[in-house]
Length: 563
Image 1 (cartoon, one colour):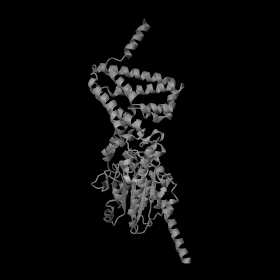
Image 2 (cartoon, helix red, strand yellow):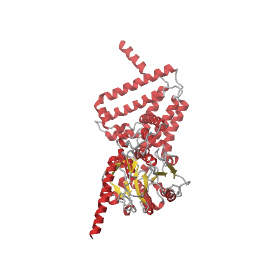
Image 3 (spheres, helix red, strand yellow):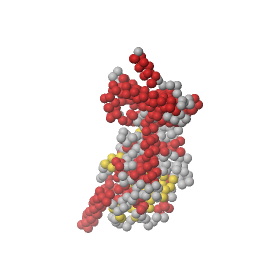
Image 4 (cartoon, helix red, strand yellow):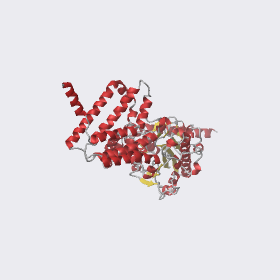
């Protein structure tokens, strides 16, 4: 009798009434089934189906479902707001699933920052038929049904009681499925962290919280007094009376291994191969997205200490140069400077207003238009010109070059990279690299007439690389901790001209040095002959180089006298 009463009481306590709670559980299951293909695929890669792995796989899938359901029960506590929150979650989950399934990306706070800084034109390149179908069938239609038929709910106390019962059941379920596999879960948490990132939409909810928290701090940073960096910077005179003229090209989505200068079997650099450039062998990026890598490379913080909020609160390299008399111009054929060029002259070349080469895609080569006039107007100053490329921005690589540069074919002309063959993707990507080769060679041609009066130079460095299907991944912005080398090993190409204080033959001796975006800040200061305590190692290297040059010059003079 007592046992029967106890069982009845337990069953009554854990029963889920016909309230909003059941709807939330059903929607959680719907999203688990329709929106977590990438999660399940990654679980199966980690634990292939076998008699031994099957119980643990069932435990993991049940655990992830319970987690989704618990989060939804908590978020939908309000009786009147629950249906709207669920509708939004359905739409968000359908979009997340499309990008994770199609490109292998993770929806973390960096990806959210990337999306927030994507302009309308870039967004258009990501919209496809499959995305719209998923959005409508798995997002909008279910969301509409929820809004129309979702129950009003019971009285607040009863509804909360029902939620607490459901959460209790779900927590108990999670404990029951985890308990037999504690060692397996310990290994899973420690060794396979990346797999958890594919949990949809729980991980993106967590990431959204981190992103909003970060943006609140960024807003605060933008409204604080800018911290002076390299305040002790002073000009030295190591290169005679010549003024400095450098064009720094910030590349977009360029892989080191797709440049024939670096050993790629295809000839993607026919122009640069004959331009006496130095292509460095071992350079890594600060991040895997433009929104991280661009501000990071100009910051003095370095990859280890980089923080968006901290970077916005202090001067970057071009701020330091501008404060010390260097004329800085930033021309952008990408989305924007990601906060780097807020205090220098900035020009947007994404429209025909400034860019004369749009067909209708505005080409990088258009950024050279009118630069002669700009330089002539600054004839008493050192000059730095930054050109931010569209480069190889994906997934529509075929749009990044004019038809004349379609050397490799057939090409992928779909936004759905998974619908193209690997060869088609490679062809379109390599054609875009071919166009970058042309653009950089034109930058060098532009600079050459200035060698007589200026100490000239060009530096090209990409913001990050790109995945082209390796390991099932496409595009970029993978978390740095697990990002493949295709997204982090980047090209760095330097041309110094005949009149430079850093001759090509001397720099070439260091082409295999281990470098990264961390080296950009001090390299810019040294290139413009500024001495600062924070760049002492770079100053020492520069002084050693100049002493070597002086020694070579004396040796040459003595040889001439003796002969």
